[in-house]
Image 1 (cartoon, rainbow, N blue to C red):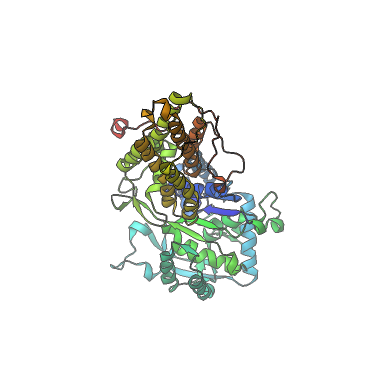
Image 2 (cartoon, rainbow, N blue to C red):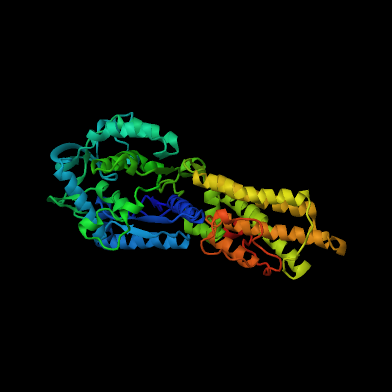
Length: 523
C-alpha cells in the first residue's frame, strides 16, 4: 500500500508562531499518528518558507543577514513543534541547496517548453503581500485596503511570467469532476469564482530589488518569487527530480506521491494552493491522478473576531500548554473545532474541557478503577465467571467504538472521532455509578465485583489506544498505570476484548490530569 503522505503549509519565517500555526501542526500530527495506528505507513513533511522581500527587509531592519534572520525564526518554530509533541518525518527549509536544485530544474523545464515569458509591467505593487495588484483588488472606495495589502506603491519593471491562464479551463474542469479535491467541499466554490479572473502569474523579481531568493537558471538577473519556491517544497523534499539533479537520500517520489493531504489554512487556499499549485503541477506534466488533495482548516477567533497583532488578541500556544499541559491543549484544539470551519478560542472553555472532561472524566475514571482494584485484589485482575446484561451492554459499547472512531478520523472529523472514543469513558463512569463495585464487600458479591473491575480496566486500555493520536503522552501514562504497553505494530483493528488477562498486575494510580485553576494561574 502507498504510504500516507501528509504535508502542511510551511512556516513563514517573517512572523512568530501563534495558535493558528499550532492548530495546523497538531491537526496534521494527529492524522499521521492515526494513520499509523490504523496500520498504514505514513510520511509527515512540514517546514519553513525562508525567502522573499519581506524577509530581506526584516533582516535589514534587525541588522542581521537574511540567513541569520531565518535561522533564528526557524529555530523558534522547531522548538515549539517539539514542545507540542509534533513529530514530523522531515522539516523542509527552502534555503536547503537540495531544494534550490529542484526549483531551478522545474523552472528550466517550464522555460524550455514555452511556459515562461518575460515582459514589462507598470502598475501597483503590495509590499506586504509581495504581489502586483489589479483594479479588481481595490475596495468599494476605489482604494487598495491597507489592512490586507499594506503599503502599495506604483512601479514599473520587467519580470518573468508563467502562462497560468492557459490552464484555467483545465483546472475548472478538474475541480468540477473531482469533488474530493478540496475538503470541505463547499470551499471549491471560492476557487471556481476566483478562476474567472485567472491571469498569468509573475514569478520573478529583479535581483536589484530582491537578492534573497533562488536565481532563475536561464536569467540570473532575476530571482524566483515565492510561488515556485515555497510551494515546490511539497515535492522537492518528497524526492521529485532527485535522480536528475543529484539529490541523494531523498524519499522515493514514485512511492510517496501524490500527497494524500496538504493541510492548509483557508486564507492561503486562493490563489496559492488551489490555483497556482495544481496548475504548476499540470504544466510540469503531472496527471490528474497526481494532483494532491487539499485539507482546508478554518481560523481560531476570539469572540468572533480574527486574531491580529493590531487587536492585541494573538494567543501564544506555548503559554496555553504551560497552563493546561501539552496534551490538554492538543485535546481542546482537536475537540473544539470541526475541521474546515472556524471556532472561538476560549480559555474558560479550555478550563472546562480540561477539568471536567480530562481530569473529572477520564482521569477520575482511571483513578477510581485502579484504587478499587488495589483495595479488592492488590491490583491484580481476578478470574470471574459472572456476567449479566449490564456487562454485555458495556462490552458492546467498547467493541463498537473502534470502527466508528476510525470512520470519523478517516473523514477528518477529528472532533467526532474523539466523541466516539469518549462514549467508552462516559459509559464506564455510568457503569461504576450503576453497579457501585465499591459497595460490594460481601464475599458473595466478590465475583460480580471482580467482573465489573475487569471490565473497567479493560475499557481503559481501549480508550488509551483510541485517544493516543490526540494525547500521546497522557495515553502512554494511562497504559503505564494499567501495566499494559502498546505492542509494536498494534493497530485499531487489534482492539479486541481480553487485552488484560486474568492475573494481570496493574499499578497504583497517579494523577494524569492534575486539576487546573485558571484564576490562580493568572495571578
